[in-house]
Length: 339
Ligand SMILES: [Fe+2]
Image 1 (tube, rainbow, N blue to C red):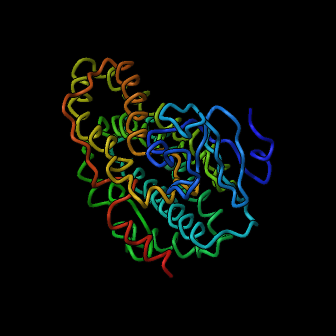
Image 2: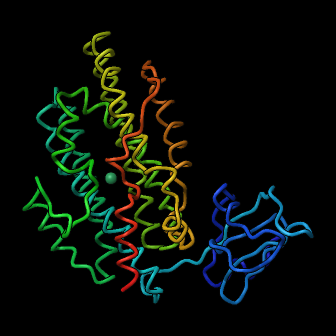
Image 3: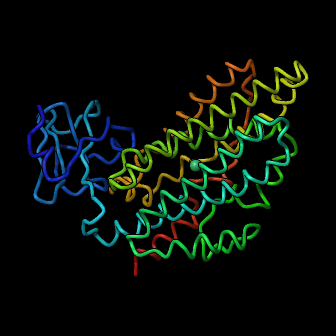
């Protein structure tokens, strides 16, 4: 049974243990500093003065078979943030905000492929919502002292080639990369069917963020991303409805390149390094790349089945377009937090 202290002082129960947590659990029951300040068992939870939560397991300490929960500290808009937490939060949020907005700009360029009035209307709705996702994230970045207007103005005046020193846009949403993936409406339909599930999985994790304002906006973003996935499935079905077997073959042919992008979206599982551990400890990252990839495959498999499309073999994840973290970004964070 959980100690009452575990639910007080803004600590919340998060989720079941993952292999990453297990790797960082101190062995032999010692409560010495672990790299992740989260540990549990199916016995009592107690919270130490610095809010490190431990759960007593067997008397020999932490066995390898826990079924516990994760405890983390949360922050609200006007709370004082520890400086390292603040840097990490701004890093992740600005990356999401800028990329969402640039994603909207890219989707709007696909309007030239629209085949029918309803297709055009639904694509326009997606553009509006992607720009909205940028807006929601910027709204919570502004109180943290970020000049969000300058970011929008840079993106709209440098839509084709924004400066990475000014805004943070994922490679996949830069025009020079994005434009190579699209040559007709089939590609537009497949992108939302096969890449959007990666965004659903990746952005869905932020619904449990330790930063409560982000948690709130993520709920809405996640709902709308699921809507974009539904748009993709709808658009793909319409391709089959209007073009028959030839349409299905075109969708199937477009599948591998988008699946490579979807699989690479959350970054390399091997990138779950020290940097990730810090974000995870802060409750700013909630899932490993491995978990997100698995979640992605689960969602995309069911949608492809619904469309009568086959999952291609041997798709190699394209990590160049990722929303996760590259080596370069780790360096960026170290620089940012070293200040
Ligand atoms: Fe979005």
